[in-house]
Length: 196
Length: 362
Image (cartoon, rainbow over all chains, first blue to last red; front, side, top):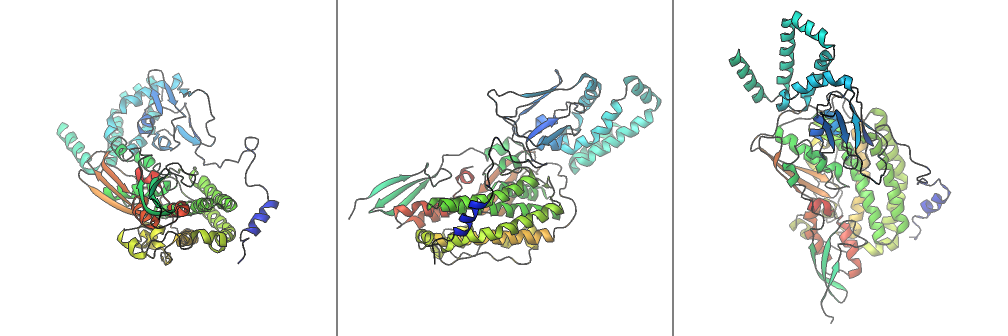
């Protein structure tokens, strides 16, 4: 019986701190893992374009000609898929939502010139593992680290140890084959045997 | 003897969170027949499966509906894992179920608030949604999103929940129990609420069986069916699971069932977080679904059983993705329950099936 079943809670809330905040004067703290916006570390980006290919809303554009990486924050759904596919871990999803704007501007980041030699070498090799899915990028860091050395040094090293180079290529190939499906890997192996 | 007339109800109506249109054939303020019509929010998401690869479609699947977002991404990922024969780590199964049960709690509390709003109890509505905020905060801390989480992937999950966060889950859920019980007391025992819901919109147990009703709508008509009984994934590790049933078959019973399911979900989370195994949270998935491969899956969404079907074609794009959502099942039962009710009770009956038209139309 009784109609004031909610009385205790309702009267109690008169003496409690309000549940709401006085936005925009006051804002709620954002937890560390909040998916707010994407940020790029241009010093490590190799402009491989995997983030562009993987984005479900096609909001990322990678332009190799102008060395720019850009995103449309108004189309981004903060899913974080690009962050997971990035082979160099250049992208990160950080708290802080993109603020409202009257113009739908893109966020553009220019990759510095000094990163270009490493980037070009990697991009040239990128189409090779096209069949393999995202884990194929795992092998790239070691590769790009090698290419990041000055060109003269790299040339000398290659001339000096051709065998070592072959060993490295074999190791990379094995890593890629391990990530392919069994059938595709068998086909590639057969083709390589025939070639030798 | 009055004259028959047709009253259009919806698609824009204060009680409807989503657009549903009903043609109510009315005579003397009594509904003789209700003809539902949908098609206002169709977005062609099933067709998108041919444009987005199977990994990208997880994000499309969870945007089918704002409330069952986690359930849809989980149901879709499980279907693709069956299609490709992937076995995910046990810890990932547990994490998925914990988040899914948490989303059931938030969905049911949201519904209770909407129900309170439908019968005009504004303060009850606000208290319900205030409690729901605590659940959304837990989601925000562990997944990075409040409503759309993007933590599920084919092969597992992206984020882990550590021990301290699991303890926080239990602490928060225990903390809301007292306030929640006061709210439920108001729903189930306050005369003004009882008057609006008791004996209103009766769907007999026989009709519920014959029309294949699902979810709390069916369980309120004593249909003993809940997909969680099948023990898929981490549900199989629960020490005991009994669906919550009611024999009243009316709006009051549906409220009662949903109110009790929140407590049941809290218990499930508590049990699973106590026995969650250590280990990996995802396995790498390589290749594409084989040509002609087919898989199906069922999942207990907050609104009831949802069926998923996927067909592969040898590429990373699927040939077909089909979902049969709980609301598309329950609309038939709603039309039956509406027969013979007062016009003033229509909004309450429509709301008690917890219609999710976005899911239904996709």
